Image 1: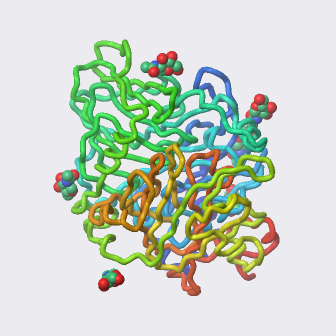
Image 2 (image 1 turned 45 degrees about the horizontal axis):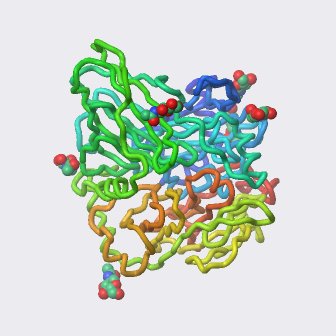
Image 3 (image 1 turned 90 degrees about the horizontal axis):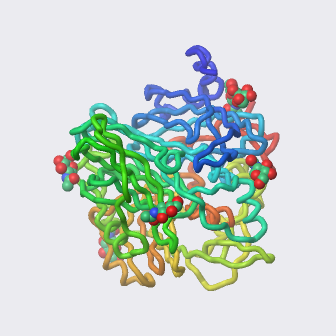
Length: 547
Ligand SMILES: *[C@@H]1O[C@H](CO)[C@@H](O)[C@H](O)[C@H]1NC(C)=O
Ligand SMILES: *[C@@H]1O[C@H](CO)[C@@H](O)[C@H](O)[C@H]1NC(C)=O
Ligand SMILES: *[C@@H]1O[C@H](CO)[C@@H](O)[C@H](O)[C@H]1NC(C)=O
Ligand SMILES: *[C@@H]1O[C@H](CO)[C@@H](O)[C@H](O)[C@H]1NC(C)=O
Ligand SMILES: *[C@@H]1O[C@H](CO)[C@@H](O)[C@H](O)[C@H]1NC(C)=O
Ligand SMILES: *[C@@H]1O[C@H](CO)[C@@H](O)[C@H](O)[C@H]1NC(C)=O
């Protein structure tokens, strides 16, 4: 299956040559990395019981993507499942290019037996992210994997090169397959409690990491699960936080770290303990029954296996987590993807031009459980909204179909899009009146998490904002009966999914799209539709380029 170099050049040229030549911005000098991925069903046994998983090139979890800032990633995905499939790239900003985002609002599903080549550029990004399958309930079956973007060679990184750099994907897990879970939700019922937790696709003590005494390692930990916040810790070892979703943080030491669904963190730890084996522990947070799993940290000179109970951690404590979240801040003097310090963008000194208050809605619609945002429960149209926008096909979505704030109306179904002008500077307040933890993600952007606190947000809550060194990231938690506020400079034109990471709720409508819009047709503002874009629904049979 690997293509020859000449073959790669031909494949690349078949859909890139036009765009590369007209888009000097697509910087042909930035390196290309090619991936050929075959997505299939296959049996997996993560909790010791046979299940049908979704594999990429036979792997569960899927292969990692290793890249360097500004690399072009050419990922040809063959869908060998019997249903439509799409991958999305959590945290990859797809600058000027939301067509590649791989969610239903931007990209037509890859039909069974067909392929689609994503053309991504990790423009001006560093850090740790992951990809996942975005349609249906595929995320419950696999096809997720780590994405890392290393700094370019000349850009300083605020810590020494680690002796090893590992992806750690953690998440809650069900023994039921994705079609059965989807059927539960389609039937209007709620999902049961998960059956376990996986570390890199393995159950209890299935994941094994060998280290050498005295050396320092980097772990890039992402919560790729469906719903549960997880606490991560390593027996007898402290972890130094260094990066959160592309931001180098103040290097603070923690004995355990809360990782909410959809989030990614990098930590360093030193194998500075006696030569033994130690537990790597992951437990669920804010649940009455605490799920747990362990992996093994094995010293190469280990004199003995793990034994006895694993170390405890926080379980239902909310304040503990809130305090930890507030302690995670940007190192203003460290470089990000560019040589200049991360703190040179003074996000706190710019006046916001609009405030959105996003609150979750839950209720029954036509006798079935649904979830929404400000009373609107999202339903996917027959044509991706971005593609409808490109071809000016009317009636696919409702522009400004969502209120700027909750107004107490009943929940209803709609294809809601909120149009916001390019370059607006927006404050979004996530208000959580429920007693569960929520996690919200925005595609296409990294946003500043300026504040979070218990209770109801009011304009006076702004006095609590951190306008100096808040962390910029793409997924934020909102504590039970609490709010979280973010600032976003809307400098990336496109159609961007704002969604809960609580996957059952996402599936049942708790999401919408932010349409960052400009009248300009300049390629400096937005790329044209990719030449190889699949076209579906009311765009079927159109042409992506004039003949
Ligand atoms: C994908 O894998 C399946 C099952 O192994 C195989 O039948 C199919 O030919 C593969 N497709 C590609 C494009 O490699
Ligand atoms: C899921 O499991 C059910 C039986 O519980 C089976 O009928 C169905 O084919 C399975 N789906 C997949 C995709 O494995
Ligand atoms: C499918 O893969 C082939 C190469 O095997 C490539 O030429 C073609 O462009 C791909 N299709 C799409 C829609 O990307
Ligand atoms: C912040 O980054 C600078 C520059 O790389 C580094 O020297 C310093 O130790 C870092 N400070 C903290 C608290 O992490
Ligand atoms: C960990 O989970 C297992 C079940 O998977 C349970 O039997 C055990 O009591 C749990 N341990 C702790 C300390 O919670
Ligand atoms: C922000 O708004 C305040 C009050 O409305 C105004 O005094 C100030 O000049 C504005 N700052 C900027 C940077 O526009």
